[in-house]
Image (cartoon, rainbow, N blue to C red; front, side, top):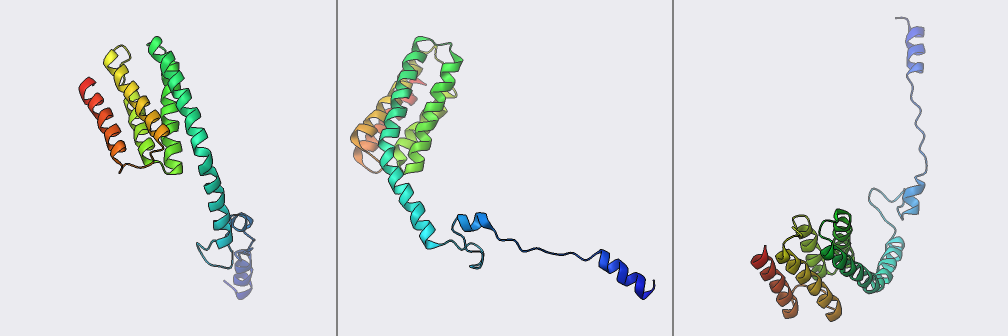
Length: 171
């Protein structure tokens, strides 16, 4: 291959790289010149402020979901073969779990997860299973009314124990 052919081939293979501004990274608080993983502290503070304000909304949100869960349970226990209502009930239990996890309420999260998991195996024709569901719902209302956030308190442990006993006895 002659020098002119080699030069011609190498020019065909040249790659031109464009360094574009990462606008999404900037918008999220990153600094393109600050290195990998760098986030602007002001952006972090703004995000934390939004989360703190949202936590105040937790009580209203969880109350609405608990009311929907209770209403759905009333419909479901009166109509045992309604699979659509069972799906709705399952989704409300999951929503309790998700809200509680998001806003840092591990006890409510525990009951929401337990109820959701039990809903997956429930036999609505068995009245014993109705007792287990009602124990969960009553415990969640007690957690909400008592403002109990975490597992460590005696009331929290008593509630967990009562639901566990209901599951053990009536499963």
